[in-house]
Amino acid sequence: MRPVTETDRIAAAISYVGRSADELLLLGVGDSVVFDGSDEALRGGLSSPAALRRWHDAGVQLYSLAGLHAKILLVEDTTGRVRPHLLVGSMNLSRHSNEAL
Image (cartoon, rainbow, N blue to C red):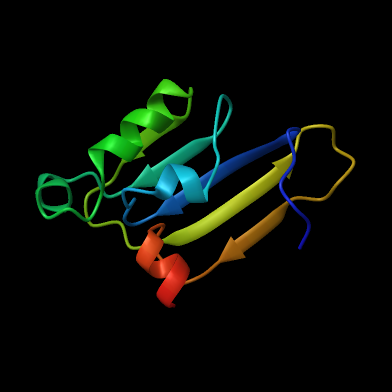
C-alpha cells in the first residue's frame, strides 16, 4: 500500500466516526464519508459531531446511514497514473481502534 497523496480522492464507509477521526484520516474537498449518524449513534458517543463538523468545514461530503456496519476505504488517484486501492477491514475510525486493535 502506498501513502495517500494530494491527488487522491477518498470515499469511505465507516460505521462510527470517533472524536479523533479527522486526525486519523485527513480528508478535504472531493472526499466523502458514509457513517452511522443516527440519533442513537450520536447520543451514545459512537459518532462524534465535533469530528464530523471539522470534516464538513474542510469540504468533505458527509452521508448518514443508520445501522451502517461497513469499514471500507476507496482511494483513487485523480491523475489516473495509479490504480485505485480498496481497503476492507473491521476497525472503526477512532483512536481506540487505531491504538488498541
